[in-house]
Image: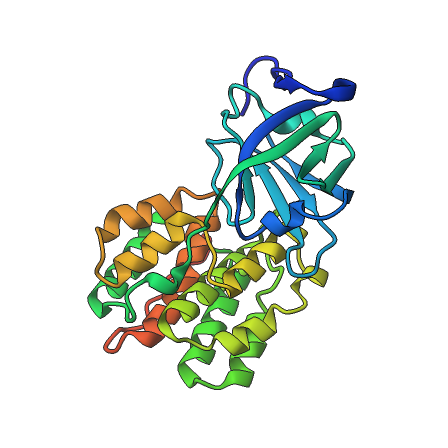
Length: 295
């Protein structure tokens, strides 16, 4: 919660009273800033981020975020914090993309550099069975509990992954799309985790990708965009480090805690999706709950 009066955004003044800021843009969404100026739409605003609908099928959303925000794979990162200059002052403003930048109201953001979002393609090729079991046990203790409908759908996904039947995986995954409240429903976060793990460890990426192909019609735009990034293996750094730790690269306990700190429930749900695939890919693992119901 923001205490006190929100500070007005201040930057270098340009022509026509436009305030300009430099930032760093994710290489994954940098093409959106090319070409002529075109309209975009503000779909969500917090003190940390402004989320824009781009109208592009492959890159449907772009996030303008403060430096203390979670760095999403579609983020344009600003050099100041949400305390210094909260972004919720931009709520309700018209927006546009192109001509080398982003315009929101009387503010323009231009990239001074780019950054490469983390990808899971460089994690160890196989998860370690003992670490998968340890992570599942820790997750049951530390993560926010899932509501019963999601527990049942997650169990259905784990069963489908175990059968290795593409049609079953596709059906079970589609049942999770858009399930749960918020900008990134728990069902979608679980699927992001499963997609990332499948990309890293050789799971049923094709069936899972097919299941989320029409996500833009079934779930909030931000969540649909993050699913598309997950299909390509792009994610927040905390998710990649968790996958690396499951493969034996780095401390597992710290990696899980860092992931659980992502959002209210998103980190735990990402971990559940990763472990659903990890429990199937790592030989000798037992299938724990990794999703206790609410009491």
